[in-house]
Length: 129
Image (cartoon, rainbow, N blue to C red; front, side):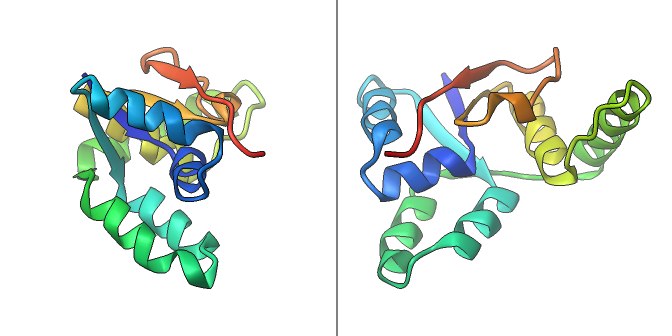
C-alpha cells in the first residue's frame, strides 16, 4: 500500500516524535512511503540546522509523487468548490491531496481538517510532543 506522508508526519519522523514509530511500522510491513515536492519545500523551510542531513536521507528514501496539469486542475476544482461553500483551502494542501488521489495513496497527516476532500483517503496520525 502507498502512503503519502504530509509535512507534519515528516517532521515528526525527523524529531522522533509520535508519528515516527508509525512510519517505521508501515515500512516494516512492506508499505511504501511517498511525498510531494510541496512537502519537501515545507520540510526544508521548517528544518533546524542540525536536521538538514537527516532530512535529506529521509527524502531520498521516499517516492516523490509528480505534480502535473491533472493535479493542478483537480486542486483548482476543489478550491473553487469549497470556496463556493465558504471554506478556504490552501493551494499547497489541494495540490498534495490531488497527488495522493492520482497516486492512489492514503494521505497521512497530523492535520486532517486541511484535507476535507471526499475523494481521498486520509489517516489522522497524532503528531508533536
